[in-house]
Every structure is written in C-alpha cells, then in structure tokens.
Length: 224
Ligand code: ADP
Ligand code: ZN
Image 1: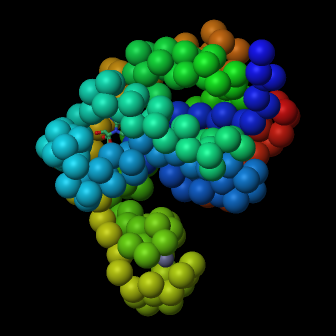
Image 2: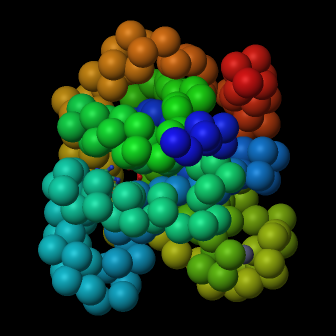
C-alpha cells in the first residue's frame, strides 16, 4: 500500500475576472505550490497547433466551456508531472460537476485530498471592469490591468523588463457575457458540492489584491 500523499491541493473557484490567476500566482510563491490553469494549458495547445488546440479554439473564442473529456485529460496528464507532486493550485478546474467528480477519482488514485476550495465572490459590474482592462507580459506571464495594476515603468514589465504584452481574445465584452452565463449555469453548482464536502471557504474578492491574498492565506493556514 502506498502511504497517503500529504501535498496540498487547493482549488480556486470563481467567475471570470474574480482574480483566480492573480491570486494563484501569489499563492504559488508563498506555499511552493504549482499553479495549474486549464485555461493556460488550453491556450498553449492552441498556440502549438495541436489537434486539441484546433478543436477548442472557436469554443474558447466564443466564451463557451470546452468539453469535459478534453479538459479532464489535459489536467490528468499535467497532474502526473513530477513538479506537481509537492502540491497544486487548481485555477479554472473543475468547472462542471462531472469535472469535479473526475477530480475526486483522480485524487483517490493518487492518495491526495482537497485541502481547501476558495470561492472568490465578486459582483458582476466589477468582473466586467476587471476583465476588460487586463493584459499579461508575453515574457513571464505577469498579469496587469490598465486601471488596477498598471505597469510601473511605461512599456516595461515590472517583473522581467519585457516589452511585449498580450490581451486575451476572449476578453472582449460580448465574450465576457457568454463566459458569465457558463459560470452561472455550469460552475456555480460546485459551490454547493464543495460546501457539502466540508472544504469550502468563501472569500470576498472585491477589495485590493493584497487584502484578498491575506484572506486566502489566512483561510489556507487555518486548515492545514
Ligand atoms: P477565466 O476564468 O477568466 O474565464 P480561463 O483562462 O480559466 O479564464 O478560461 C478561459 C476559457 O478556457 C474558458 O472560457 C473555457 O472556454 C476554457 N476552459 C478553461 N478551463 C476549463 C474547464 N475546466 N472546462 C471547460 N473549459 C475550460
Ligand atoms: Zn514579464
């Protein structure tokens, strides 16, 4: 019998624009965990021109959810990489009940357990504001926002000094509306699912990035 794996598995749950990516990156540094974003993995598969990438490109551009089978298989493969053995932060997965069940099964196989599910709550207006101004550094992936987190020096990444930035294709207002509907219909039922499991922590995600980060860290520390 293998001994139970005590590495952390954190899940960040929340609508688009709740700050899952931003908070994951902060937690990654603090707790030595690996951020695992299914959105990033899917975008990478599009960039690589793979069959999966071709299959998901238009779905993502329309703001709809990619099929469970594809996402679950991408996540499963990534979780098996050796750098994930010390613990992961799942950012953007699971997003449907069947993905949540698939994750339970995967963790049962690896002897891991969900440490906490942090549900980030924001109001609709705020989500749209956050999404519409955001961009990332093409070099290091650091996230920025025209209003809430501008570059310190004009045209240079604070983190790596790079000067190339990207805006996501699905961050347009029309697509954001579709993404919010998907969240409400498909993903928000997971709040109840994890609440029943006894692992849910609600965090108000309306304040400044650092304050939200402190609430999340307090939640995580109180559970380990
Ligand atoms: P956000 O949380 O801001 O919407 P993500 O990068 O997590 O951004 O997701 C972008 C898109 O990638 C989603 O709109 C969806 O098309 C696809 N996607 C990401 N994760 C999943 C998932 N777990 N299941 C289905 N589709 C996903
Ligand atoms: Zn950078």
